[in-house]
Amino acid sequence: MKKKYVWLDVDPGHDDATAIMLAVNSPEIHLLGVSTTHGNASSDHTAINAARCLLAFGGPSHVRVYPGSNEPLLLPARHDPEIHGIDGLGGVEGLPEANSSAVAALFAQNEDGTQVRALEGMSKIIKETWKNGSGHQVTVISTGPMTNIANFVSVYSDLLPAVEEFVFMGGGVGMGNRSSVAEFNILCDPHATQIVLNAPVKKTMMPINVTHTAIVTRKIHSLILSPEISSIPLEGLPAAASNLRHTLSTLITFFADSYKSTFGFNDGPPLHDALTIAYVARPELFKTTRYRVDVELTGEHTIGETVVDMWNYRKCDGTWGRTGKNCLVAESMNVEAFFEMFLETVSRCDKISPLNERKLS
Image 1 (cartoon, rainbow, N blue to C red):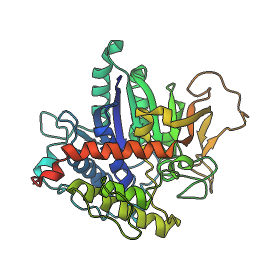
Image 2 (image 1 turned 90 degrees about the vertical axis):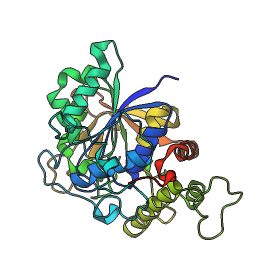
Image 3 (image 1 turned 45 degrees about the horizontal axis):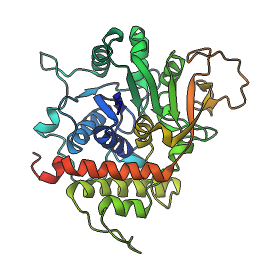
Image 4 (image 1 turned 30 degrees about the vertical axis):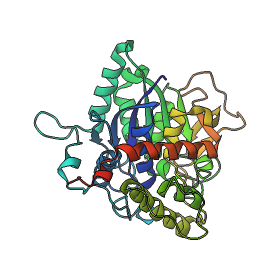
């Protein structure tokens, strides 16, 4: 099996947590590092949350967390406590304490004891992995606003040949979720997204049109809690078979309640961000089409809209950059196969998670 070398940029966030769990426990993925950004919560919270999740889900010993951007390139920072709670992981039980020594140890440090920031960590590790062409290209996955990724593209353009693909959860085709036409991640930093879209590197967009089909139904939730159950209860949920499964269940429950009250999702919450990892690990689960994609940057009512040129109005060349059809857009996925993969990954995580040892301090 040829593994994908992955850098993951996140803003945890409940669905980001599931993306971290998949990235750590998918055999197709070799995770290099995790950077964090503003988004679902403040950057202080998202950095701590990433480390808590990395520890809880059995992250490899070499993987560290690199705090990144506090705010967008131009706009004021915005967060989403209505969906994720003030700290980004509202209602989640059983994760390591934010102030634990084990969590603190997961932050990369310079020799003087200061934290290594996202831009430093990304550039160093991607360069070391690429080895000037004799090593491996890196797939950069973004599940939040793309401020860190845009900074990397702008500052380290010489390292773009080291990037195999930028994969991002964000945007929508003709729909939004935090404005009439804009999805939250893109709305938070539309200028950063456009910078990444302009980069001469292959890109794949995982829009809400697709992520809204990845619904954690009561059946899926029951199997997360208890994989050995013979039948799904008519009411309620089964008991958790492990501490890890209890933690994942509390995550799903809070997210489900948020999506029901805010967006009217009655069958369960969508696992937006997990789909980016699934795409990199199992691209055959998805149908994609290459389009020209741009972001509306000035519209009073439409800022942050991802404008997908479905009808080829814009003349484009064959490149992935400013003048080309610059992005693969996911249009559908095999939902059943995705959740089979997800549940298999939960089972792998269950075997290694420190949460099941009750020894976290």
